[in-house]
Length: 70
Image: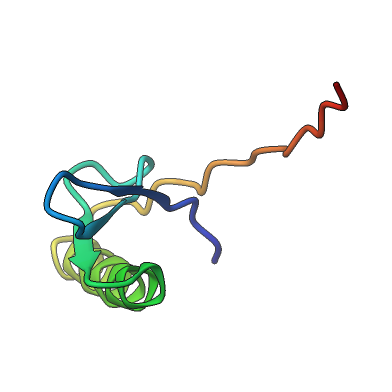
């Protein structure tokens, strides 16, 4: 499964990763790559918890990237 992860750098320089289709699924890292790795672990743990509680897994969000030439 693929999930969209939004990454923003906070005021302290940490990279914060949020998974919009999994409410409350957040992670962070000192680098962008570390934030992505940590997000992968957070997603796996989130999905495992949903399965353990018999909850449905939300579908991933589809998106398109649009290139605008100015």
